[in-house]
Length: 212
Image (cartoon, rainbow, N blue to C red):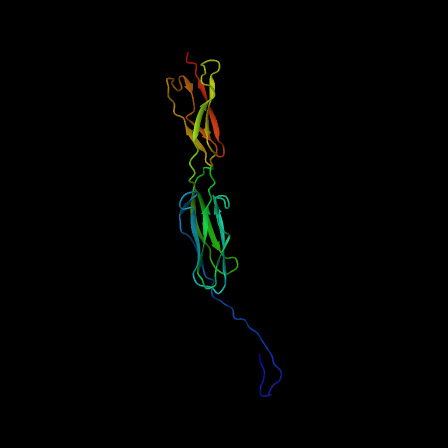
């Protein structure tokens, strides 16, 4: 504000300028304290920590975006954002595995990316943990459709493999043969039965051969 206190000018006048803060926003780094966690047993929880390279005079909101084979809300829980208080440099939240038994699954990797969309931090950072399925693998049961077949007439029967629960994996059941009959002379039978992911059974055909 300008004015003259000695009467040599009259009136007042104001002008404004803004001092821009050119300090670079602190860089965010994300870490997870465990390389893997379990659906059941210890540990089921990993600590996810967002850290800043320097303190800030602003409340820093860090977005957590996941990309994974695991499904948020079904295989694990994690909040979408964390906040780092003014003057602080870190904050932590928990990533917790969920037990989705009796489903038998492969190990699932969760990759978390941290960033700020409001300019309160800079850079991006990723961290990874793996959810280990501790569900017992399903039990396989083998049955045959007919307990006897002939070399002529009714020459075939089904061999069925059944699981006690579904699996997210393709299950390969190996068939070992024994007894007094000779494979490829007295009968034919595949070496394996494959049960597709999500299914509980499949079959192959055992065929008797007429060897005269």
